[in-house]
Image 1: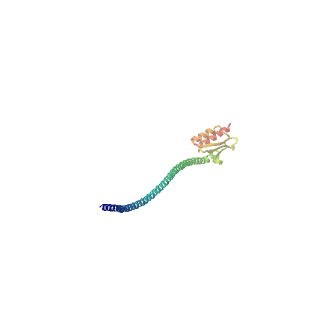
Image 2: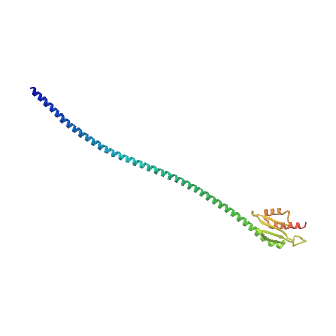
Image 3: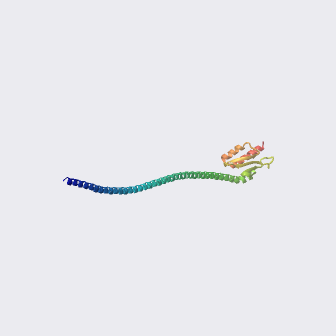
Length: 226
């Protein structure tokens, strides 16, 4: 009986030993397979996330590149806007200068027209005075022994004769011109008369040329008796 028990115990030990060996081997195989699966899974995930990270890095680089390009474009636009502002400012200044120049030209034109009108008016007045003198020239020569000559610088020279009863041919000379203001002006008187300034002023006030010549003759006549 003891031998059978011992044999049974020995068989049971061998069974458990074989069972453990068999179970351990299967478990080791399952663990190895699981480890390989995990490794493959981890490698796949790693490759996937590595690829994803690379794509994200590329995307970040692309975004950074776009940001840099946008920054450059913004800088370029800002520079162009500044240049445009300067150009507009210059154009405004040129327009203002052009307006001022146009206004100045218009003022000069108006001033020139006024001067031309004044000059034309003076020339007309001078022409009328010369015509007045010419009309009475013949009258004075025939009745008063007066000779009239036009000399240099548009002056009129009046030569009176038949003044001195002792010497009828003795000349008494008065030279008259029209100044820049359009007024009569005595430039010479031979012999000199004390009243010449008064007679000149009266001629300017009255514009009566005939009376002036007559008064000059009277003054020369009175002087001849002194």
